[in-house]
Length: 413
Picture 1: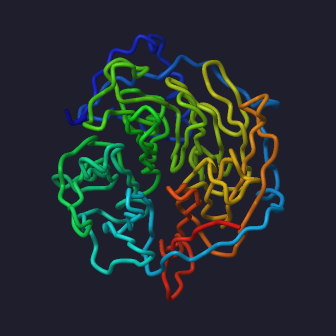
Picture 2: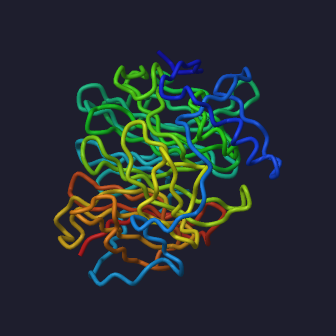
């Protein structure tokens, strides 16, 4: 089943907040939001919430100045390959090959430490702002079925949509063919398209989306925007999803490009703070989230709290913003074991976030690495060799694109 539109009955959403949201936003002339299909529906909010006021929540670490202290662990960044154009995601194959997405629409192959010149696949994408070919993930049983998944922006009958598709890699790994659409009609805009896709410990596919410039949609469970979605590898809605017959798994997100699993049921989720929308700026965040959680956008931001809403664990007043995110599980950098590593764009660094083991929603400290050495950093992902891999994003129109273009780095000691 391809998910193209939703018309849901959610027992958790009997009390609607939408009227209150519209009242609070009307002074900002924010338009009302349509649900994921082409017909306007009444907005159904993910959870009832009350009017919020800023609080000094002790569980939330507000970084008021800069990005954090310089890390003390010695690192070495090795260049794996160069010559890429806005590499957005990396998927590792059983034979240690890599599939890499380039935002203009190419899936590239890295084999034996070298970038193969001919793309594995070229996908017809719309490429403006932050859309294009974004995330990539391989099926848990890739060795048997050769399936991989991509998130990209498509032109459908003259209108843009974000979608997730499944492709099959050829036996020699040098080409691929389209198999089927998995999730369709994810709202799209010039900015806030999300795009990270990953398979979880439960074998389900998780899809991070952005609010597509319509903040109220993050609270609307009839919309695929501003969410983390959860579907089966074939695109079905799992029966144990928190909202009835809906792929929606976590709500209240502005624009996530990174998440990873602390355990089988708990995710650490990064989210972009506002860049002028609703009169707010900065305040990128990391939150601890589980099935059905509401991360609060746009009702709360910063370290605010509210009934039924998740207060972030750490917030940076100055915009990072966060790209790919991975829990460090390797042995090359033993001091990092269990830390959350975040690639950042504007701030051009790696963030290491350490959570308190006795209070898993509380950040005990955080550190900065590689500050300014490699420019904008997009993806951060653990490889099968136990090493951390990071991509640069200096050719995306917001950085200084060098003659070698963007690259993949392996972070070790």
